[in-house]
Length: 341
Image 1 (cartoon, rainbow, N blue to C red):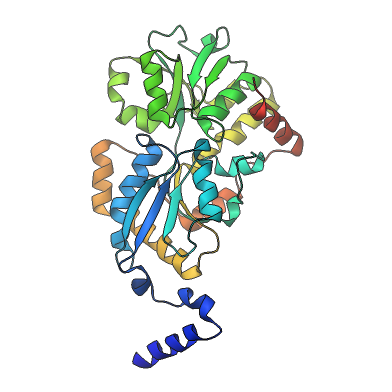
Image 2 (image 1 turned 90 degrees about the horizontal axis):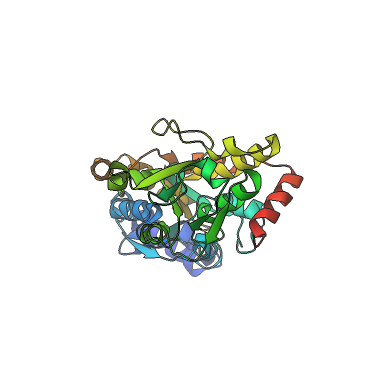
């Protein structure tokens, strides 16, 4: 062992020093280090919730037991954090993040704020898939999808790059709804508060967040769930239509299904491109162990949060095989999302 260590030192001192981090043992690399987990949205929503739960448990499953520290980095519908992870974050396994589930779609649609290649990220794993819902406060005149097609409904959103913004824009054009977007809220918690205060008629959040963090709203019938931002209906909401159902033509429905595929990405962890293979392997193995950790499972069960994990390898394949659109459909969708209407 002493000889092996000496050989490693010699390599690091020579021409191969640039690759030394890839041959350092994982327990030696991570011991005493801090991993920053960057969260692309403000505190309070499901992105923030899942990130902080994982941060409490991930480190104990990594060699060397590093501390994992959540860091809020909201902005541009979380694309600020995505761009940071892609180009500026350390590429040594000490920076990971959770960003919008529409990450692959924003690149495909050539969002000007998306300065990354989705396939180049190292996908660490998914905690759960996520179906978002559009909801309206009980005293709003908007009670159903039919109402959305006959009267204006103000919608609190975080801004371009998130489903809270993209879906209402697309539904206005492809399904005849009349959402009036009010952008700039840091996260879904702020958007829901705006709706509760009467600043807007509606907002959106994940179904999981609504049924857990806002269970009293459902129990006391303070909100009406209008529609699902997913490819199909949920068993728990059999009478609530999924967005693709609302398309006026087959092309419209395919475009909405394409955008709704982001629900499969859900709440996932990514790491920057260019990590040593050993670091990617360590992070993925630790993530998988975390997903079966009894303490994490107990914590999720206490809050009623969903858990539908996929490994990093499975996520890497999933983002490469999401539904596609012909160029004409992509151009049309780009025009809708970039319009000022």
